[in-house]
Image 1 (tube, rainbow, N blue to C red):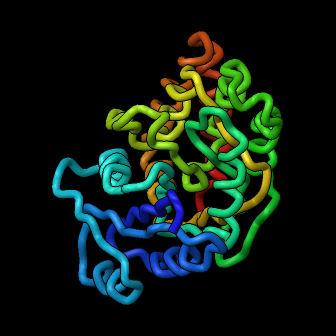
Image 2 (image 1 turned 120 degrees about the horizontal axis):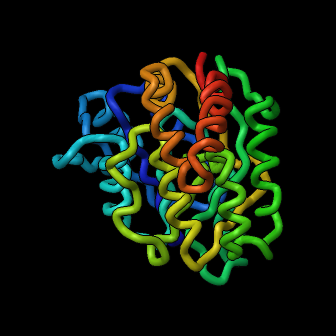
Image 3 (image 1 turned 135 degrees about the vertical axis):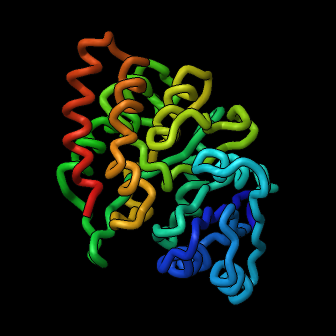
Length: 261
């Protein structure tokens, strides 16, 4: 067992939960694994029992940010990945993650490139993925991991970091990390705050996980409810004057249709 944990955040009864857990069990480097949920059910408990992993129930305030913050508090290791219940992690995710982290002086987060899972098919290249790779290309150089201007430039035109690909270096980041004010851009807001701190954004420009896009995902539901538009504008205002933020919000909102099935 190494100094890394997968905290699987389970919400209601996802058909993909067990596939996610199986992908974590197949890692070439083993980690601690547990489930954190605010919606306990026989379905979740049965899967956990079958795989011999613990379940922690959030009895406090509910919500996506509250659940993520809760999950992070239950980990006993220095490095924590919040595994999204619908996603798949390739067998070398943990091994590559820990290898990259060793190259950093003061890592705050590790994250990787990713592919999408759409209707059971792996999509490694589309417009959405191409744009994110362009935004992150300067962070592919380890010399730029600690440069605040490079990190902020990568975030200034959208949320290029794939949240489920992120591993958190608990000793080097504030706790709680996620702000309850946000429902759709909670991860982008966290990266923006971290981008202003001293430390490293450790980026692996390799596909190490698959992010599932489907009708029942939280991201799809939030976009469908149009919550994200106001949050997107609020995020752009952290980087740009109001008139530019308005233009970018319109462009960004249009691009988010690619997150819907």
